[in-house]
Image (cartoon, rainbow, N blue to C red; front, side, top):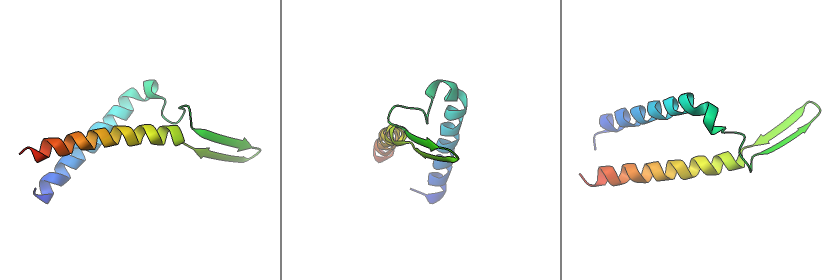
Length: 74
């Protein structure tokens, strides 16, 4: 595959993902899922988004597998 086409497709994919997050941020509640660890004490806060990381990993794995299947059939 031509590197130029790959960069264009990657850019379009990132724009679509960005629009998705902008439009649906009220419904998704990323960063406040069960499994996200927050520790607060006085002026100190530690935030580890474990549940959000797992969900994003699953979604990206599925999307990238679909993209690879789509491009391998040509």
